[in-house]
Length: 98
Length: 392
Image (cartoon, rainbow over all chains, first blue to last red; front, side, top):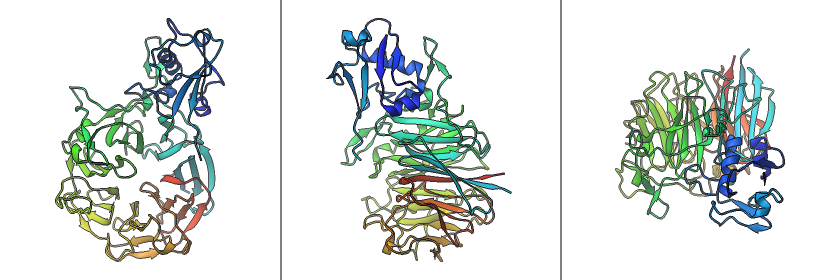
């Protein structure tokens, strides 16, 4: 089970709780986490990665185990602590600045 | 007695204003979608309880919302339509992907970028939603980078009408400062095949075959930004309005110019003489008097503010020309707000109600065709769009 923490706007839009729990088959990667997230909460489709390019939206970052993994390929394996559910994967929105 | 409902999109959510037919006392509900930009909301003429909304922001992109109860509750309609291999629903309602298929689409062409180089089309947001006059499940979306999409299943899924983007003049289309947006969609209520659209900065286009093929309709327009004075495209059209009772007669607010056409856009004629500025964004037509039009002049070259700090709606009862300032109830000193292109609307009540919202967060209304004005609300977030509905 993988735990995902979303920005508040996306929690509200998707109607999720404070933390999303997802089951992933095979190697845990950001891409697979997003596939499962979008499948369960279709209104979140396109809000984290672009519909067409499948790339991360530029005002969002992925944090895992206190590291910014945003610039790693989306199919890179996630750390064991994320894959096992010990630590959550954070989707972080840029500060609004105003 | 009939009622009026005014749909207000702002930089920080949506608001719905309702009043009885007198339009003196207003109920304000919202914010809906707090914290999101609501570029546009519009109700279906065929079912006023069906309202579509474009919810967007720089962080999370585009979301389409719809209501089936007049704006009391909302849903992102994509859930439950497509099914993933695992059996989960797929979120098609937010998916605006340019059609590049060999069968129905066009290659992903390029348009001009700010620096004059060519740039591929990239979807950014929905600027305008135009529901069909006859079918609540059919709605058109004008998007940035400029293209036209249509849904025939209540915004569950969207298909591009790719003939517009692939028209052939795309390499000469260019973004204005706000982006290369398709911001105006006018549907002919008497001819379902006829559609008008406008793009900043490409110009106006018309389809006579329900969106399959398009022709530019920019003859008579001028632009100081184009070296070729007879250019077919490249014009920064700000808005187009038409009284549904008089299709083919349209009015345009251009980036410098107010124009009219009486032949469905084949030729446009300047009618802005006498205005304090021929620059502005919105333009609209009185519901009962197809020759009575309204504009809000803005100083185009000096900061996009009302000339002399006076917020004035100008009315022409002759389809352009003989302009009269309408000022009663509007601030006539120290006013420096702007009114954006989709932020003025008319209702169908008698006398015609007119509404507009400002970048300062005021929504003004007139229940007497513009003679007098009153602020319905004063302190909303910056207003992006205003639409009016008339309810039984």
